[in-house]
Amino acid sequence: MVETDSYTTTAPNLLRNPIDKNFKTIIKAYPNVKVSGKSTYMNILKAMIELSYSESTHAFAGETFFFHGYTDVKVRITPPTSSSSALQYRYAIWGLFKAAHYLTEHKTFTCIIMDLYWCGSGEPVLVGVIEIFPDPLPDISGSREPQNLMGIGQQAGTPPNAFNLANFTSIGNNETALGASTNAGKFLVYLELQGPSLSLPEVFMTIFLALMHIASFGTAQLVHNFEVRDLITKMELVYEHYGPPRTSPPFFIYREAARALGYVPKYMFAQHRFEAVTFVLEIDGTPVGTGFLRSFSSTSSVASQKA
Image 1 (cartoon, rainbow, N blue to C red):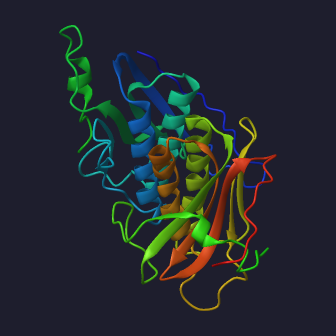
Image 2: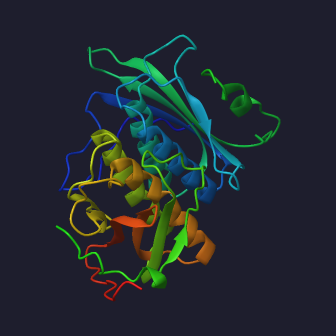
């Protein structure tokens, strides 16, 4: 069993690190209980997106998260007791980021249980638990320890015609797996992979970093000059308005920015290519925002007239 309480963020120099210094974790890892890295990343992604939709300081009752198609790994977040209101949405989001960072840093994906603590009043107080585990749980050498521990909780604007969307692949089509839009209408994301090749950790950890910041702003707020950078991997995620900021619905809000990030790795897996990507968010036929996931040195762009 491995325990850790140390964590150094590679947070961007453009936005303040959203993880409060009073937030601490203890991670117990089970090296003999392996989990799929792909499913783990995807289900942490689903959890972070859905959690970002709520007010960050509100109490979170707990939930188990998984994408259909990635059900071999579950991400369960619970308060310390069924009657506790100590678990806030922001604690769950911070914990998920730290769990992903831990698994990525150690280059091995195993079952982990993370205890979440808040030290605002001096002594650390347990506020929640995150469990990442395979489903079904294996019986390792006759030991039931992992099974016994699971469930300890209760359950500056770009011209509007800058992108030819006919050259992009669209996904979305009113899918509900990533939550409903607060803007009325059909939600689509148009994507174009543009190279160079990226690793899974580069893609997912940059997206997780962005989601942590998006959640701190409040997803009903308008997106404004959003850029996060990972100074270790030299990756960045940038959001811009598609043209001048809109004065009438649909608006480019952080909820849509968070929701769109779920489609990026999903599309990359479908294409069997992990590369820098440009993507355009469209609501009811109106492009509202453009996203860029790329290395710092990336200068690729799409410059053609809209069809």
